[in-house]
Image (cartoon, rainbow, N blue to C red; front, side, top):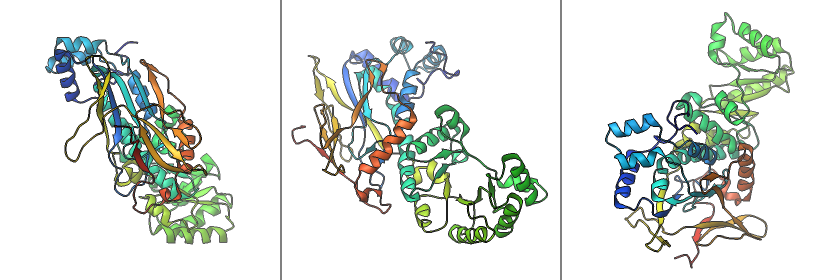
Amino acid sequence: MDSDHASGQQGTGLLTDHYELTMLRAAIRSGAAHRRTVFETFARHLPVGRRYGVVAGTGRLLDALEEFRFGAAALDFLRARGIADPATLDYLGSYRFGGSIWGYAEGDCYFPGSPILVVEGTFAEAVILETLALSIFNHDSAIASAASRMVTAAAGRPLIEMGSRRTHELSAVAAARAAYIAGFGSTSNLRAGYQYGIPTTGTSAHAFSLLHDTESQAFQAQLDTLGAGTTLLVDTYDVPTAVKAAVQLAGPGLGAIRIDSGDLPVVAREARAQLDSLGAHGTKIVLTGDLDEYSIAALAADPVDGYGVGTALVTGSGAPTAALVYKLVARADDTGELQPVAKRSVGKPSRGGRKWAVRNLDEAGAAVRELITDTEPKGGRGSRPLLRQLVRDGEITGREPVDAARARHRAAIAELPAHARQLSRGYPAIATVFDPDYD
């Protein structure tokens, strides 16, 4: 595969931090670059008050790993800046990850200490994946974790992801994917629809009404184009007047109205009463406008049929990163045997050794704890292994459709105790326990 083929972007190799190559360069010089190592990605804590996190980004990481190359232009850049010496440039020029990776399945839940990604390979090939892995998982897991709470708050009402205009253009695509995994039904982002097969939807903005001489003309143009099943935006001027015009033009079969401003609970109730009085009993009401999980939950008793969420979703609803870290936990000694290593600094300690994880379940199938061990579990009644192999000796083995991650998340949420789904602040829904024999 040509290392320069990735849309002119030199692969994904330069999506990394300078210090990764500083370490690589020095390790090549010391002779330690090819020492066998194990790195793990985990969260020391969840965002304040959250009870679980959601793993998202696995599929994107595997795609990025396949493209992790340093083409001629990238090597020229590293040479010109003095970032890499000849030995390092030689290594990077032929870089292909040849190790193995395990991870929690995408869509599953995680808790503090969960080893959600385990990378095993030489120090050289594993260390330079740190920034790539963390940038993908920190973003996508933060979005999926927030989206999951919004889905819970919506209590079965459909959710539309519509945050593209509130974030970086490529982050928007990733956010739509993460939200879909967590249970959102559709996205406004066409690139996400094209790339990942996510259902897309979209009606019109206030600009469309303002373009026409009257609001009724705008409604008629949209109805002529899309039919009576479309969704009309009714809060450009006056909601009652717009609702009346919408039903007069579309008839009682109007698909839906969208309300984007005002005191949403009050406006929704008034609009529902007006629609019913006009015979449009089947016309749905969709609310948008700076919604988050709390405002969605507050609308639970109101006559709302769906929500569109933007800013709060793509910013993780106050937690824009999952606070994941990527740490060296084991390295080979002179005999080739892996030995635990760990950071011991105050406030940021880690636990050494290659880890495995299982979720213990009670007789009813509810999760009761996350058990971390130093041996690969076999599973069985009341014990669900959490790590699956994603890459084996450089070959990607763990790809799956995004719908598989979406289905997994539904199952993972159903497995958690009921208090995990509360929006009020609390502790992690289940404890992470290290096997007493681990150390």
